[in-house]
Length: 133
Image 1: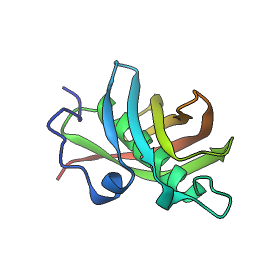
Image 2: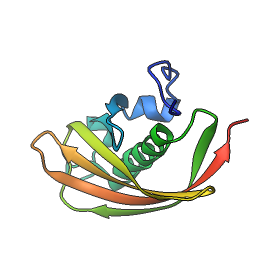
Image 3: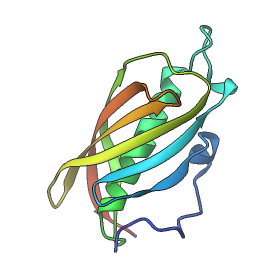
Image 4: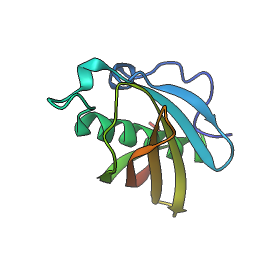
């Protein structure tokens, strides 16, 4: 059994702000949808990078949790983010994949893809694996 299930409906406030919606895990790729809101725009009318980084942090964490047993959790140690194209208001889908894992650490990569199927940002997260308390 993985660390995520449909019962994970108690979405944290930050994830609620990002409009996070868990779409599923196919055994390799975790898929999450976010809603880039007008509130997230910068002076250029595109989504401010900090919101994209928060989406990537959330997606990599969920990707890790989907691959772990329900008794384990993760915390982010580093998040290396690459901004590739301007992101616009609207739905943004994240695809996250575990790249490597040991007993204590995990590396997860994620892409943010806009409604036009353009990858707007990507990230690599180094995560520490912990027992749930």
